Amino acid sequence: MQFFGGSEISPSPPVPTASGNNAHMMYVFNRNGVCLLYREWNRLLHTLNAQQDHKLMFGLLFSLKSLTAKMDPTNAEKGNLGVPQLSGQGCSFHSFRTNTYKLSFMESPSGIKVVQWNFLDLGHALPSTSGIVDLAYGGITYMEMIFVSNEQAVLTQHRKECIFVDLGSDFILQFIVVVWLVDLIEEFDHIILVTHPRTGDLRESLKYIYNLYVEYVVKNPLYAPGTPIRSELFNTSLDQYSILILGHKSTISSDGGLFIFLLSRHPAPIKNVLCRYVLLISELCAHYFS
Amino acid sequence: MDTNDSLRVASLWHSMHAISQQLSPTTGCSGIELLEADTFDLHCFQSLTGTKFFVVCEPGTQHMESLLKVIYELYTDYVLKNPFYEMEMPIRCELFDINLSQAVQKDRVAMLGR
Image (cartoon, rainbow over all chains, first blue to last red; front, side, top):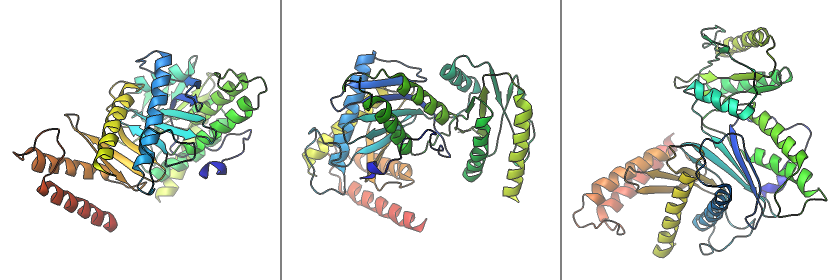
């Protein structure tokens, strides 16, 4: 079963995928439908109260699982709709996408379900994206973005404390950029790239979160299974991981550009460092295009 | 899967689609477009009237949205314009079936060509 191929918990989170993601909400349920954990980093619309929301979420997951088990074209013998499936049994879905969000789901053999929501942020209206970023990080004092036109590090747009990077929609180029920008993490407290609408496969992320759960929650002798999780260590490590995930996002603007947001809590001379990196990036672009 | 099962699955899908819209964290959500499972992908297209078309395919198949749009056109041409077809009833229009298989065949050939 693919689940047992998961990684060990390690002090440093795995390298984020090239397309990054834009996590906004997360649920963890146990097999009886009790919501053990609900975290939100940004949620603009609350339609129901918390209890009903959790119940509805669990109901949706349960029904979708039984639907996929029934619709599985490879399995000859199918149970009836509505019969609860054991964790490993039958085909299960791992994600679904709507036009505004993507939901990723993972179920452990013990019935623990981890659900993660990502926004498909198209990055058009910058004020709203910076608003989202602000909400997620409250207390950000300084924000800068870089704008580079294709193949050349040209500061073509400067808007208050913002500069934008536009490297075109070439996926490979974006990947190279992300790899380069990974180096920037050591320099700043937080680095954020806003997401590509086509968010990648998040199963590795979810497995990592599950490992965190095992380490900090299950192994905690004072934790009673089935009760909501109130572990400080778990919450901090989850926040750190989500910051790191949120730290690698890129978004495509309407004209195919790539927006990169860099945030720091210090009004340090970011611009100089950034310009240095921007030149490096442009050299890379030139090399790639030559 | 017999007819009863297909009806059950379809009504379950309809409710799931609506619930996913309600659970959306932002406004303007129009329901599930793509469901990725272990052994198959399910693409869904919703028309302006709320009729949903969904297609089950191999994981990672591209261009299903265009196929769904073609199927939607076939539906409007051969089903809705059929004077003997009653709304909300199962579709038993021969021309629709023939054209549907042709469209799927064409898509399969086009996919092999890509």
